[in-house]
Amino acid sequence: MQGSGIIRVAHHRRRFDLWDVLIYTAIALTSLACLLPFVHVVAKSLSTDAFVIANKVFLWPKGFTIEAYQKIFADASIIRSLYVTVFITATFTLLGMIITTCAAYPLSRRNLKGNAVLTFIFMFTLYFGGGIIPEYINISNLGLLDTVWSLILPPAFSAFNLLIMRTAIRSNIPDSLEEAARIDGAGHFRVLLTIVLPLSKPIIATLSLFYAVGRWNAYQDALFYIKYATELRPLQLKLYYLVVQASESFQLEMTNVNLSNPEVLKASVVVFATVPILLVYPFIQKYFVQGVLIGAIKE
Amino acid sequence: MNMEGASVEPGNKKSAFAVNPKALRRKQIRSYMAQNWQLYVLLIVPLAFAITFKYMPLSGLILAFKDYKIARGFWGSEWVGFQIFEEIFRHREFLRALRNTLLLNTLDLMFSFTAPILLALLLNEIRHSAYKRVNQSLLYLPHFLSWPIIGALAYQLLGLGNGLVNNLIEMLGGERIPFLQSDYHWLASYVGIGVWASMGWGTIIYLAAISGVNPELYEAATVDGAGRWRRMWHVTLPCIRATIVTLLILNLGRIMGGSFEQIYALQNKATTEFTTTIPVLVYRWGIEGGNFSRATAVGLFQSVVGLLLILIADRIAKKLGEDGLL
Image (tube, rainbow over all chains, first blue to last red; front, side, top):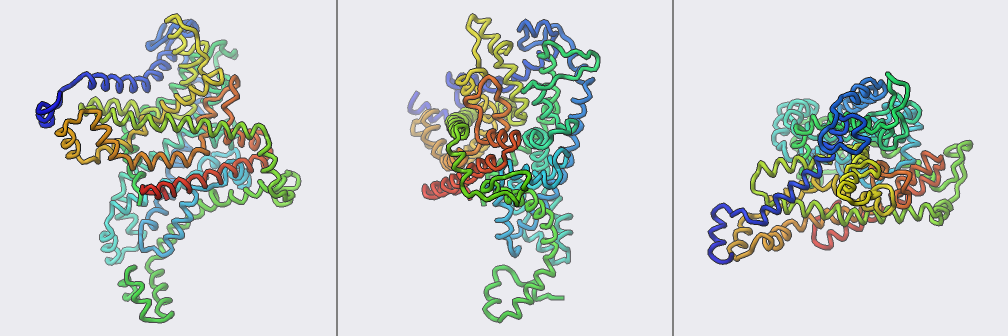
């Protein structure tokens, strides 16, 4: 295995040896470990109660039925929480992007007077904050408890996303382009709208997805701030109460009796909450990877 | 209009400054503002949000130094200095939460930090790009799932009575394992689930670093007779050392931190020994229990220690000749 043989290998395609087989298998097994839990839950959600209770369902449904899904779609509170999540996510993403852009463009200009102070004011929030209770009191004082705004306004400014967008604008848009537009008499608003924004489409897509997926998935703030207005619970919090804590029962419209074994319903509500993410996942993955890489660049 | 102002560039500031007294400087500022006021207008909204939702809560930190009584209000409550801190440092529940925070984060650092490095090294060995892409897509998937979903999946898979894994164990003749129901099993499951959720996503940064390695180094190593593992050890790892050290220090700085969402989605009534970390305690004492002063003090303690750790970590990184974080 040593000597001249190796040198030839460097120029030609390397042989597929035993180690390759092991590595390819190890990777495949790890990937399956990420996929199979979900396959199992889908199988469970499409099975008949009896098979699930008897622990007979593995990766394929037994006694195929979509009854559980019919029940979920008939549960008004679950559907409502989906609407709440969609509204919150859309509004939050729009607002977050407006705020991020409004801060990133001025700060991307190195000759902005006061840049260092302003940057410090924004970036300080990355390292030190009031914490759970002071933030809770603040939201309470602002009268936002038990409103959707408690989930939209407080996290809308993100120093991390601001940092990423500022880095992207600095590296993608040459100063000379801006200067040229400025000499032609364009104001900063014009430069932002006609030059910076169109040239920043990829980073806008990436950060919008950061905001949207982050908001879609979070439940901590809803747990803290949405206490009495149960109709405003977003989907993830609803899922938490229904499945993880199992403190809340499904509101079945057809029967007023709670099922003695809600395992199938639990599985199907997990699928219900995951499918929206899975549907967009293939399209957004690429933008996320780019975002991580831009975020890693330090200036 | 003020055309001379337009030609003043940042680099020339000093020379203009030297030539003349205050009058010209005032004029410069006026012309600078005339041209750039729009930049400051843009900053109004972000500043308003940062002040309202990030800086205004800071005033609530004084509760940690007051004996907060709802009847007497925020300002009317009595100052007690560090008395509340003295109380919590003697409180058994706090000490346990502190221990759990350090324990869970240390375990997480040991496993969740190293797993992506190993995985990235293995992924780098895969030469069929389609195979690599498919696997990467699957490995990144958990990153996009919320903690309630991951928690729910964990109970569906690892549950004692009807979890898939336990069903398989029983089928193969073994005994059911209380993965999530007994203290030490829970601890292992928590760490395992953390690795599962973050491992794939963590490879991105390492794969990017690996792709930046000069291919000539590999060729030279191959010519010198280095096999797969020696190339990994003597070329790849040294080349991504800076990335590893930076991320390690960043993670060391977070050893007092902790995700509320992760732990809260995985805890249950059966195991209480390791599930109360500092954020969970703050939630219990403060939002559930209404003891704002005590909960604020616990939170403040965590933030201050966390900030100090990050500053220390940054210092160490720079001493070691790596890029700092700040």
